[in-house]
Length: 142
Image (cartoon, rainbow, N blue to C red):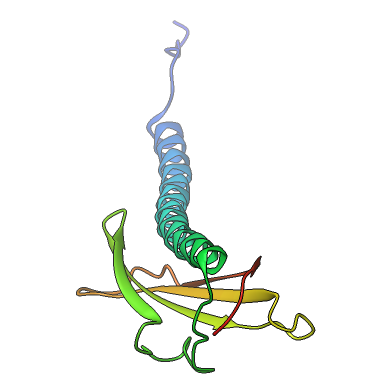
């Protein structure tokens, strides 16, 4: 009587296929974790850019309304009185510092505004870094 072989997979073939599937799944899971981490960082940086932009727009409007007091040269490196504040955007506490100066060659017809925003507050930092924007608008300094 001839020996018949049943159709199907052997235990060895199933084990190899399962091992390959697990290796591919673990690699994909790591990529998902990295993608989520980068997405969170991008959202935090966007919130910081919006906080900086709002302050720069506020300073441009104030410059258009009347002369502004220039800031100390190190206003971006310390909390200078009147040139720093704290704001909460998108659930994140941000420290804003700004520098107001007259750009070289403009002789008081324009104001350069530099706004630097960094994460502050309680808890561990979320690796959002620091955002800095620069703009020049018409205005006078006092």
